[in-house]
Length: 65
Image (cartoon, rainbow, N blue to C red):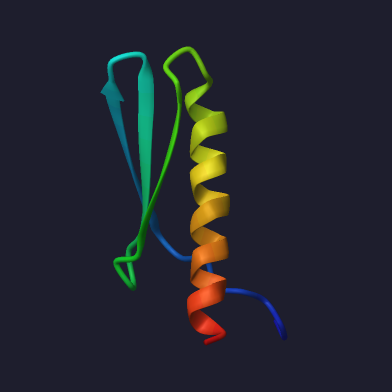
């Protein structure tokens, strides 16, 4: 399929720090890591989506340097 992007593996780590959930998203190929933080009562899926979006933006920026 022309123009299809290959799916990259992303690793996620969730850490509770007091009343905050820290989510790290790591690209398995490059090892680039980003983190986001949110309240512990926030949906893990929402925090994961936010971390993934931040990682994709970071990967795009590093590829276009």
